[in-house]
Length: 467
Image (cartoon, rainbow, N blue to C red; front, side, top):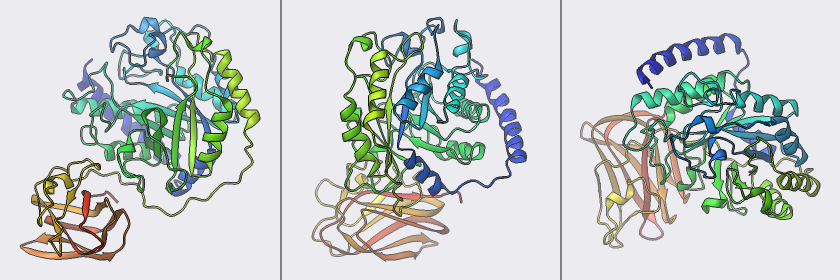
């Protein structure tokens, strides 16, 4: 694969697509909050894990599995759409590309794709056409981790970034309105691909340029506090990975996902293994989530013929009978816009007032919200400082007050040897976010004037948002 050629072709392709988009799109993009509300109001959708893993009996197959094994001879996306409709689902989401890098559309970026299989049909196109025919919204799943193309830790190059952008550009310019992209394999402990390796803000802005009304949600945002949207338009929870939304306290637009079978992709045992109980799906998922600003997406995996098994079809029909989908929309509460920029304070040199035992200042900017810098109880006015070692521009600061002990504080920056105040505030929010006009400085500091106990700072973030 010649990634330099991909890079050149991609740039020309994006320029052409953007020119066409700006010429043809006169309608103003909807407000993000309205889009988030509309997503929550969809309530229920079908996740469709269908890709080359379907033909291997493994969710993570050999990265070099031969495309010749992909041959769903009875593929019928209309059956999928009708099954979704029978459960009163309102949208679908297909795995256009999973972790092993096989593309289900007619891409120009790689030869590892559906047109190089015996099937030779664009599955993404057939899927969106079938779901729209039934009046259902269409979304796509896309994995950043791509083991076939060596888009994995230690191997990532700028050519990989260009490939991701080229593939997303194809998906967002060929298939009409895509209501959301569900991204996976990014900033997860098992993928270890950071938001700097594949730059989040760069990808996010490309998506919004191509389709301003397309939501971007990262399935791996669970490591971040539940009070704020970090690197996603919708907070996601994968139940099988132990991620569970608080139905009592959630205040963000959210998504919870679960497979109707034991695994995400089809396995040979599926036709003869009971699926999850429809009553359980309705009573303990749909009904409760919909009261907590959370959309529920249930995965149904087509088999190697490209059809949904009979036991899953029957369960979906039963869900449709059991679920009373007449509840009015619940307006979302107020919340901060998503944080999408890189944290420029991450892993920078830091200083602080006296720390408590081993919990020294490095724990406050280690990109781990589970650790924290802790002030020693003898310190009356604790402070914490990030040293950039050169001047940086920034316009947002986030303080994760892990125990919510901080009551009054000041944020300052250093310029030409003088400390200047950005803001003085008094609140006990767990995640304290301050957006302000861009400034330049070499250091940033928080001074804690009042706290109910020695403070814990889980993360101190500094960002230079594009606005």
